[in-house]
Length: 79
Image (cartoon, rainbow, N blue to C red):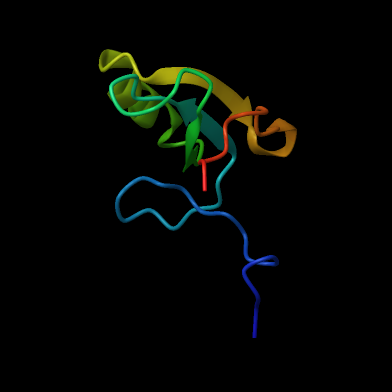
């Protein structure tokens, strides 16, 4: 049995179960404070597609290798 901490992160593309390699950090300025970052994960195959989807809407803020991702301070959801 695996726990959520040991599961391999998977791509956020619909129907894809491949291992995530990239973090796509985004923000919808009509819904989120400027410092807030939502994230999608992407495999190599879907990185460009998901980046374009967010980019044409003006939401994409950063694309970082999964192993290098650090959640920005103030980015967490207020509780």
